[in-house]
Length: 556
Ligand code: MSP
Image 1 (cartoon, rainbow, N blue to C red):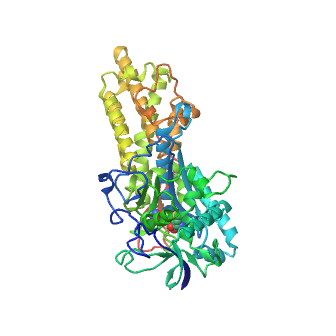
Image 2: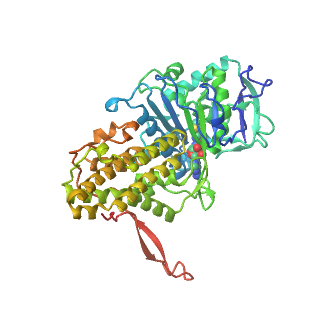
Image 3: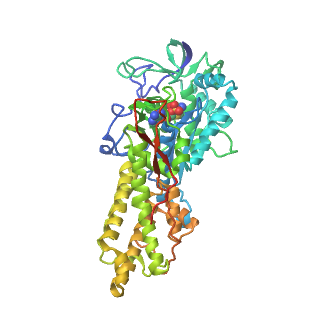
């Protein structure tokens, strides 16, 4: 049982009657595909479970603010929590590549990618106690484990907000006072069954029975921000945590003021969340913001769940997958690619190690890695690793160039509409075209023939390497390290890679005279070995199981 006293009601201009929320998340909540139908207007929140998202912020001065949920620190991250962050990182990298100016300088339309940890509430206090730690130490430890995992997964966030950060607490207090001043908070007693693990009151038929005012304080939870006008109570953890999206915008060391934070780029353009927390983002959050007179976010996208054997992967069920383990065994690129390619963004998706290995080997090791390696091997053997032609001249009259350019345009649309799996598929189609081209043209035998055939073969190598260069740029939001390795093998520097813009994926980047690096496998194929099953653990079954290691190298 838990009791609460402070309640928030919807601003009266929006309420259908006193004590009723009437936030206009325009249609029923899990809304598939309807987003594209209605014209987008900034300042009117929309929510999507799948489908397209509105155009990016129109004004050049408006940053593209993108958020992940702030993760609970009751336990270290699992693959389910990593999933949202990987997707957000890919979207942030793609958006940054659209906004980057000359020599990598970001234009005013910069991207602000926010993530962080949600550290107050009973759930956290209980888990700290179970570990024999005080809540603050516990939060420090777990929050840090998120940061370490994000580093391992190549997550390049701009802001990491912790809800125990004093600047956040100051923003929450100021926000609370604004809502209080607006007359939307009133005192009432509430008692009800409380679900600690989901931090929400279980209210049957919540949606059906109409939207209601909600309790924003707790009398029985000590680990939280005290309510400014009633220090016996703490602020409800969701009311507190959602404001992290705004307090995160403050720069380090800057005065902790709500207005200042808002001026740093609010409203957010996109909240990426799992579908289970859509209600908080699409109803409570806009209601809070409206009451405080602050703009609502442009879009909320609720993605599906990673499942294991059909069940939602989660800490409560204990059926989680260790992302750190996956990264240690297979590397960040493989993990990022697999989940973004395999799970259609918006739908649930099941993990299987066999599928993981098959996909990653087929796409990253073979389609991309092997093609680059073979081509660079031929270039080394026949052209002293130097390009004899400009890529534009080499591709004159060749349909592959147009096909690649069309597919890059398609991938751009898909990234813009958060169709991440389709974007991966499109980029792999480019790789398949490259493989088809080299197999059909067989430059290795043309070199042997000499004369015009050898000249044609030298052009073909340029064509394939230009195709690889384009893939490297376009897939870099998904596999940033792999893309860097491709780019440096093509003879560019890391600085040149970091300065790339999406429009550099246009045909024509490779010029005559460019010297390529020694061909070196860019992606280690994951080898599986058959391991005899321990007879004592299973007498009934004979045979073996596959054990994976990513030591093998791609054959040239
Ligand atoms: N602390 C709140 C969010 C506050 S945002 C102001 C919270 N935290 S959480 O750690 O429980 O969950 C964070 C996100 O991870 C949610 O979006 C949730 O949907 C997502 N996932 C947790 N398990 C998941 C899977 N098995 N699969 C995909 N995402 C899942 O909720």
